[in-house]
Image 1 (cartoon, one colour):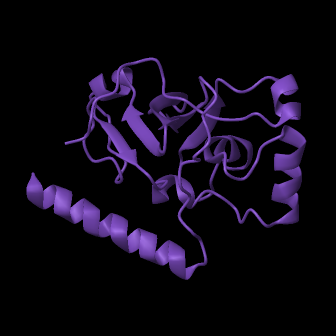
Image 2 (tube, one colour):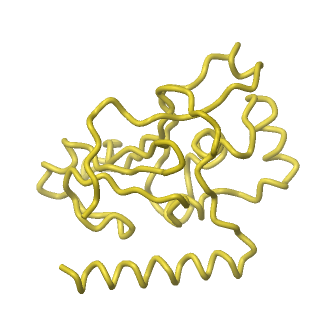
Image 3 (cartoon, rainbow, N blue to C red):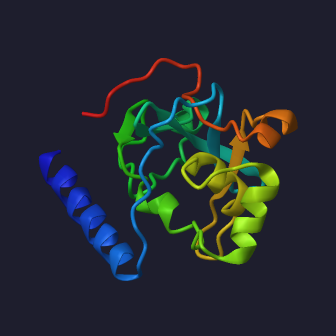
Amino acid sequence: MKAVRTFFKSRYSAIKDQLRTWGMVPMRAAPAEPTPGIRVRVDAPGRDGSLRRVGTLWQDGREFCFRYDAAFVSSPDAEAIAAFPKVDDTTYRSAELWPFFAVRLPPLRRADVREVLQKRGITEDRVLEVLGAVAQKSPTNPYELRLEGAISPERARQGRNGSNPPSEPAHSAA
């Protein structure tokens, strides 16, 4: 198991290095107090073509967290996402957004991206909301991201955004 962990850590490090060469700075969890209920659902096409929930990304304080969905874990055809190699109830935690998610984010300095964020009342430091607003689909992989527990339009106009873990108890990654 240690060899597997070492392998994935080296791959993760190489991907982070590549992102930096492209001018992409790893996104960190926002230091502000998150708004309860905001999370990003990760879906993938099933064998029948319909989308099924794979897992959930959320923020817990200054850490991003990811956990596979229980129904996905119990599915006989469940395949791991490389950044999260154990398809079980492990909660993965990181101060930096995993490259699996980070590569989906367009440059935040682009005018069209800034316009979308401004219209939705999302600030750049609210990474989960940014993912939900501008990175739902990617031409490079089949996964789709869906923002859940979205803030109300009134709160968006006030610029109060955030995120929180799903209601299930957290488990630490080994």
